[in-house]
Image 1 (cartoon, helix red, strand yellow):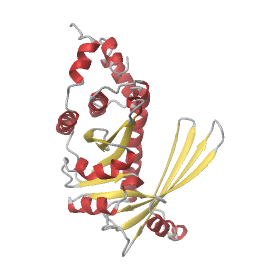
Image 2: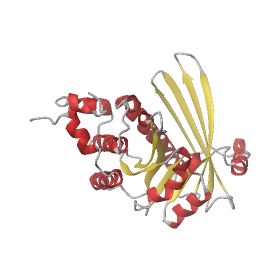
Image 3: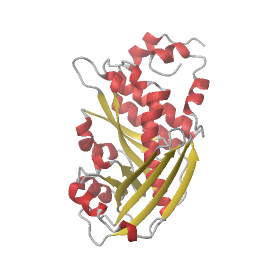
Image 4: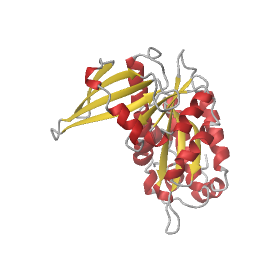
Length: 298
């Protein structure tokens, strides 16, 4: 088969409508998704800066994506800069059916308007609370966590380190956040066997799920699932695709290439591949030159 020249592909891709492409990719990956068993469908919202799109006269492009916890991008939206991720949250999710879903996001999106929007759309949420919301953070952090029983505990040893995670939950009669029903504390211990370094991290979250609606194991899985999606967006796209190394900034091409990377990741994840890099190398072995020129791994 004759492979198109890289310049031909560039001329084609630079003319594509990024919004239309992302809608098509989201619809395609959603259609390929195996229907979940009874229960909530988890969706993570996270942003990604395309650092290779930065020029001497313009800052880098930032994208906000909604990904199923299975690893498929359901929607994506380009935002002007990091601060505008907040304003892009609702337009991004307007394109997705949120019935029977649980939305996870980092502390930037722990906004009262976001919480009210999700509940109005029929979605539950798990939102991280940090010091950028001092009143809410102080109230959740100062709860008597030592006296609260443990809901879930897991221990994992891999990659020359030991990780222990402990989850506790506490019900609230009233919390100053739309329909927040529980506060959560996750304590993570990490012991690096190479350096012997021990780190302890405490993370606080709130959720609209009422007590008893989900087990401690389910809550822990959703929280960890969001961290895995953050890792997928940043680690896989930066290391496997070397996204930040490719100085792509012409027209719509940065956004279009990000969408195609999402498509490749989603398809391989849906097909059961956990090692995305190996799967991509196998797929691209007969077309290394044009893929490499476009910012895909050769």
